[in-house]
Image (cartoon, rainbow, N blue to C red; front, side, top):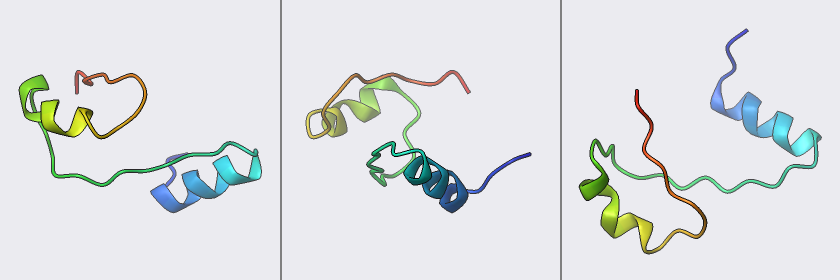
Length: 49
């Protein structure tokens, strides 16, 4: 069953899983995301979708 964003965030909270969501414009290449990566901690990946 597909879940919307708010349902997903609520479920993560129920499970005690902390999460942070960063909203940004759509990015289609690794080069486009380079400036954003500097301000976000953790590993960075590009999906293949």
